[in-house]
Length: 135
Image 1 (cartoon, rainbow, N blue to C red):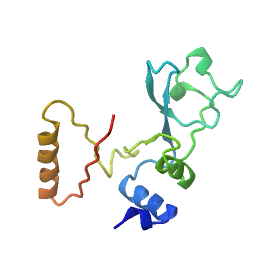
Image 2 (image 1 turned 120 degrees about the horizontal axis):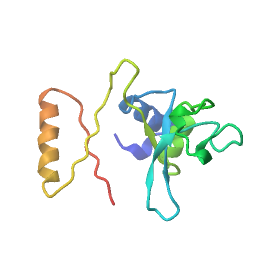
Image 3 (image 1 turned 135 degrees about the vertical axis):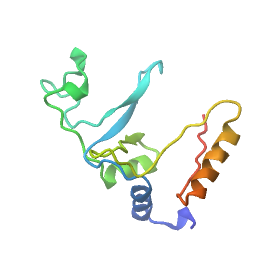
Image 4 (image 1 turned 60 degrees about the vertical axis):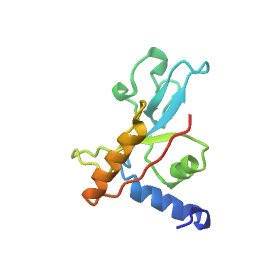
């Protein structure tokens, strides 16, 4: 299948099929202006709102009584697929099930390690995809 022939909605549907996770919350990537620290935090509809967000008091989002997490929907997925935002999903459901595994291979033998991983999953008939990050 040639991805350039797909509509944006078709690409969103492929993403949602491959990366099924929690739909009630997702994470937003952030980094300090000097790029010294980066990470992900849950997308909250009350983030930085005066009187509702306690980040300025260094309270963690998970402990905030006003947390109102944004649900993952097609709008956010579209922004992510277009490269306009970097989002992360929470693949572990409330019942501790997950529909996919992501593995990061580093070190001098990463290419051999990933192929062993790939072929083992193929042996069990599990769909497997390799994506190489460019850094």
